[in-house]
Length: 109
Image: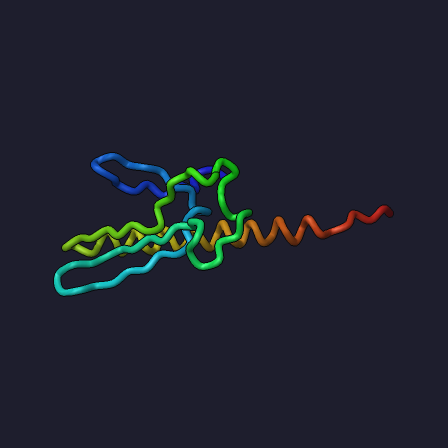
């Protein structure tokens, strides 16, 4: 489906990451700061299967395992946290539905 990327600012540029590359997202608050931590699917981290990695991945590839964003005003990070979780739910539900439908057998009348 379209519109399934998360844009993350890295060195002043918005870098797209497909939602399927995000393993989980968490939010925490410490003092005046709000932190949004995004963990990515990467080899060597918690039993990641080879089929979860992109086909371009090889032994020489570099992977980002996590990114942490911080802000004094939590409004944007709270909204981003909610939107990422909602998008992950939608994509996972769609993938589950496709897997279920692939097991169905068409019956002839």
